[in-house]
Image (cartoon, rainbow, N blue to C red; front, side):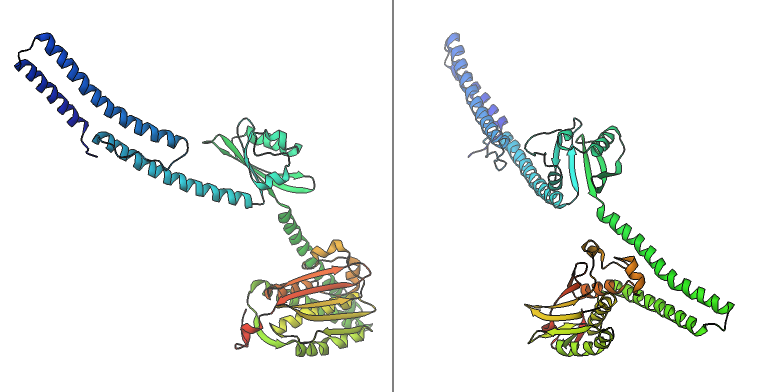
Length: 448
């Protein structure tokens, strides 16, 4: 396509008109003939220029209509007149940048949608009229009346009076709202932020049950720790004063009691230090061991204590157990703690340890025929100092940290521990640890 400017076209048109006028005048034709000829020439030149301009307008207009319909890939073709072609190229450049911006916005929008849909907290946005603009999946799960395909008022979807009242308070204030509310038995933290540019308000409803449970666990830990320390210290102080008031009477018995409580405090502090060390480290000394040899040594440690209470000790090992990678000293501590826990609450019957290989894992099970635990206490059984039955705890001395230590050792081995129990039916602890023995076949000791 031969390109030229609009100015060039106009100059050529004027020259043609002048040339025709000069020719007619040189021919000495009548004035009316010259006038008609000039009208015809001017009309032809104007029609030619108009056709070019109309053609360019149609090209630009057609492209704009297609873009308006959503086809952002359309571009204005090359035009004959330089001025229009330059305008078209500028528009094409703008369309390219706009298309690139829209593409990036679409990506960010999709990423934001994925983030919002994956958040467990309830999120939604509403306009000043109270209509819901958008909501995440957690909102849909909590409020089943919500339909994203239609515009709904929030009061038609949310039926909780307390939440509705707080939403109205959020609409009335210009400040950021943050308050705790109770919906049924669950506690939530409601926050509201205002988007002035979009004239919308964004609400977040966070489930704070886990936070409250952690706070309660912390308070219980402090209370139980204080109780565990106060009991032996009170006894030591009382018997010391008794010996001071009457030094010759029952001194040996008092000293024995003081010694027992002192040992209890030492064990408590020792277990607490061990638990703190386990919580602070992510490394353990891994070794490849023979499980049969490991349990033979463990049986020599545990059997005397179990048999001294008149209980039967059953050690059941599956045949062809593989070599196993673990920290043997910490794994030994797991079984000692679990068996000691069983000894406190088992007066007759047996304590059993079972071991078998399952695929690439090794499973261990420690069970007893003791008094058992109510299922309502099982979710908290591994908490520090948690006592399922306080009256039972007074009769059986323990630091209250043994099961917490067991859980942390299992976690350090990338394993899982579960407990099942019923009152009067005994208790069973199941442990599953991954076997990475091949990793340590050449390096018998390594960090894990």
